[in-house]
Image (tube, rainbow, N blue to C red; front, side, top):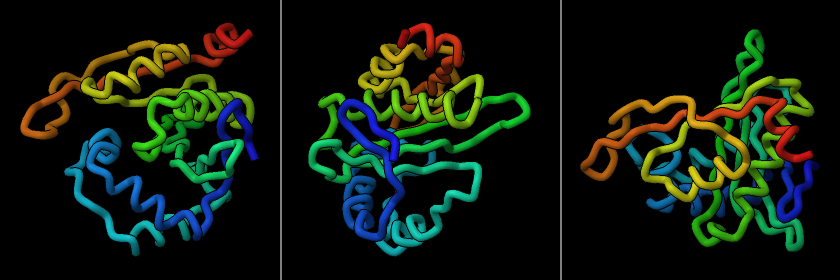
Length: 178
């Protein structure tokens, strides 16, 4: 449906359930996704989540696949929308074996473009944990700016960590790509 240089977005399919569950159950993937306790989800819970995806709501979730092979590698989406203030919060995850190959950067770029061009949103924001250096570098390269730090907001692996709030404005994004 939406095509980048390396990846394509599409709707989730029932066939994605097993791989989605495998990717999201990896401890290294899970620790970067949610401030909640990184507790494993069941395959049944993943099936229910995929079945509940709909184009008729304000959160948009996309399955990400490699453009050349069609292989499902992760997901991304618009997690919250503040229509009054024109702000959207986004997120992404990839299976660990797909890290460091440019798929995440391309997927994030495509997601940002979708939000600005299709949803007519003025600002995109996200939260990233201070220990996720790879993601922070990716977001900075895409033009995100650090807007704030929630100090020691996250307890993970026996330590407190900061949560970085990053954002990019529509005009900043389009200046960067043109």
